[in-house]
Length: 464
Image (cartoon, rainbow, N blue to C red):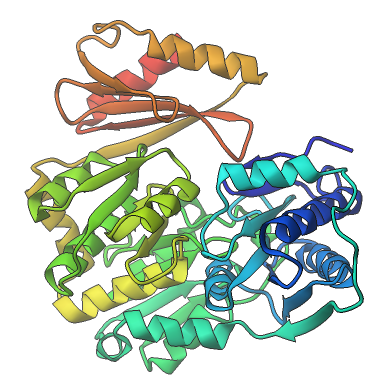
């Protein structure tokens, strides 16, 4: 048995290597033990899967095991986005198993355990599940279990209609171009667009276990066809989602990628000023200072969490909030679930454009005016040989002296997740932390000029 580890968003490993049938059976029985001891055998379990290789086969193995152990299992009749399944965990008072490796390369498989509050499982929960791996069942299987094929989309869609102004979106005078990226959103978001009677075009509107040979990640280097299509289509906007559709990617009218930090800022402005939402902004330690400046302008309190939506989701459950999000392209809002939802994000952007009658490029420019700065973000991902080496590098940055990055001067450090170093110019910071999903050290940088950015990248690489 290989080491089975749950990271920031579930268990991920290479398909048919560490993520194989033998290990899956062990994890499924461990989940059965956890659900039984936490909720009892009457707890409903719902299961879904994204388009990647063997997600349907692995998910069916888990569904069969759990039903044979005496649980009632609702199994998705189709490929399904993570947020659709997560919403139904709350709606049906169920625990959910989602088979996805999200935006990881096609050779990966993953499994997310989603408790009945519909957000990512906390570390205490996944640690408990891992502690059950390889242990005997703590209960006696019964013959009362059953396996039911279920369509989870209708209830999710009805819920969206209660928080999104579909009538307003239907007045949008703009061509929407949706790049399905072969993702789980195919068959969901495009159906919503069709029912809204919008002018829309689609790309890659089919499922492909290899995601067209690319990463299922809605970032600029994987959205080249969408960017070209937007540039060639007057008065248009581009939207996309990642493999399991909990993340979003947005292209403005000029064919430019709009960062998640900008999208969250725009939505915060809209929800506060146009829809009168009240509450806090929840962001991660990797989020832009732009968010803080927009929140300050609106009089909104900011809660900052470690990186990972499980931390954002927990803060959502514990606070009154307007919006919560992370720089990697995930967000959710008040009255929705404490889980990132790329379909929701796409619809919110369309609602903003329809309601304000303002171009996305103009909304971006408004953010710069309010913040009195244009923030530049970058990230360096460095593979390291061991966990010990990662710890040593982070400790090195924790112990840096005030003038270690001259001419920039360190003003303070934050160690809630790795180490975040703020500089006295008030527009620059760096964050050094281990990835929770891959064997990498992540180095985040934000500043207000290309010169500072290149200087910091060079200094960071030299230190490592």
